[in-house]
Length: 374
Image 1 (tube, rainbow, N blue to C red):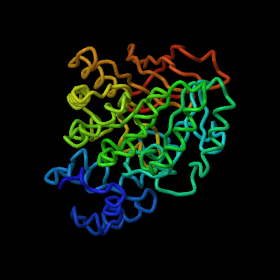
Image 2: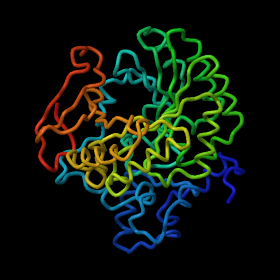
Image 3: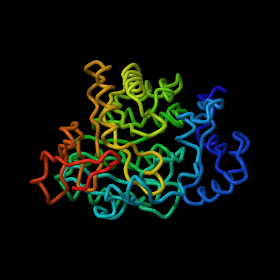
């Protein structure tokens, strides 16, 4: 299949979105099928044919399959890993309307859509993704007015969902509006599209828009590769096209059980990213998200071991990523273990709590702890 020649909008209609379609690709026992139909009501299935083509069907534990196929584990809402929440990052507390989340003085994040090319099973915003009527603004002008009225905001993140699933004219309205705000120095577009649906990046109209915007404001693209096998010739070409627009491409991965939970997995991912010109940036601890935590989260002690061992295999550029907890109080860098205590450094502080910025936090951990209470 020559994915690059397909119309990106039309190809979305070929996504696998039902259990019956899923059964065309994998055998499901009757009991499993019944459970998955229940799961699909909670977090809809949505898998592009391109991403399906990456699965090794001979391996029931294939990491690509694990990230896109629904699992009966998603019915678990409480267990040994601890409590879960639908809003682990505290989005609701910082919602200013029109999709604007203003958690840190200098950064505004705008949830611009609930749509993604694929519904990842580890999604931390699964309560809104694929479910119209969430936080996304129908009129971006309200978000622009908020940003323009807050001169302390020097950068804006377009998030979702996946902003690159919007039409190019809709993105143009957003980016041109942001380009007119003098105190906004740079813009980030958070997207997993280069990974799950790279044919979107073969749209010359989109590339022209990104190129033109980058001539006015610096453009950063945080993307989301989790496994080295997601780095394919097509995704590599998609990244190359973004870089030719002048964008800086960074990667934010999530440490996931059964996907990338060995030092070799993490090292291969970081090395692969550097080889295609993507900067390793963050490796997130899987959040305590409802219907995600109990089958994807790795205990923090084990996570530190994995990251330390991976860094020992990597060169200086490969080591630059930070192991992060995206906590309600702000981002916390996981620096390591001191005896039985985890050592954290708070990278950002919420509005109104400047004294918390850059503080060191140490906390006792038991062997199964996957999160911290601070």
